[in-house]
Amino acid sequence: MIERILLFIMIIVGFWGIVTKHNIIKKIFALNIINNAVVILFVLEGSRIGSNAPIMESGITHIVDPVPQALMLTAIVIGVCISALALSFAFRLYKITGTFDVREIKRQVHHEA
Amino acid sequence: MKKIGTRIFITLGLLPLLLVLLPLFLDGTPWPVAVRNYLELNGVKDSGAINLVSSIYLGFRVFDTLGETIVLLTAVGGTIAVFTRSGAILTDGYYNSNISALTDSEKQMLLDDPSFTLAGEKRLSHVLRTHLIEVVTGVLGPVVLLFGFYLMLYGHLSPGGGFQGGVIIASGIIFLALGNRIGHVNFLTRALVLERIEACAFLLLVFASVIGTAMGEGFFTNPFNFIPGNPASFIVLLNIIIGLKVGAGIGFLCIALVGREIV
View 1 (cartoon, one colour):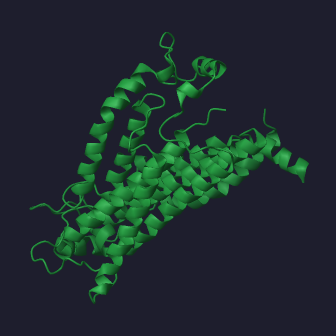
View 2 (cartoon, rainbow over the protein chains, first blue to last red):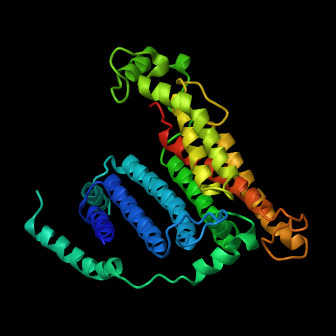
């Protein structure tokens, strides 16, 4: 139970970071925290029905569910893609506006419009 | 200083989220065991891979993997496009530049940059690097690459596989880039080489997927079925292709992110 509560706190911290932080880089970090929390939650759920790693050497029984692990492999790679793309957008915004602060970016956008 | 209204607003926004997510996390519904039981009995027989995670993402769910590699390709392309359109120059390796072509004031500017260099080691060829980065990354780079290739090749037998091995190969490439002296580039830290490896690996993956169709069977059918006693060979092949693709792709992304234009 304690691990689930910790994961829940992790997700809430991620959401809190996305909502309240003004620095775009910190927002991207928060996005990564949520991603990691979801990955760990899936692996944790899959591990509830077994105790051995799903590598079927002779005599291995009672394995954990390998399906969430295979899916989370996908999620991890896509998380890396999302971070890279988000960082490149942050870089572009920085090149144009000269700041990572969303309030300042918003002000400049309104100023130009 | 935040206004008190903003804080109340944020708290009110997070509260519904808390109410929706908390039951999801504390939920005690039993996890379904049907798929696990099927895989435990038949997974090795059907796919030939002892590592069941490999047998899922390269056997039972290989379409998903094909889609994922397309996502990776799109992300790499998009990142590089956004990067180069916003004024950055793609360099090979970490902080690569031709030192002899710099003017004296530019050299001084490099030496005065406080971001990485320790005091007392102001050599122009090692600017922006501490001894730690130089020694550790330069020496560990080939070892990490070897470990990545091991994980990639033995993914069907032991923990590992194409994606994991590929990410470790990408780490090895970054280590090689960080460990090099400024102005020196390895074969593996050239952006053009990595780009081509990724493109070739994707082409190979598409080719491997349609080769079964050409032999009169389904999409992504194992073309080595006629070799008896060797059912995992297709998984090994796909692991190698995906490992090269992920390693080159993520290495290319990181080289693009650490490469730096000297203004």
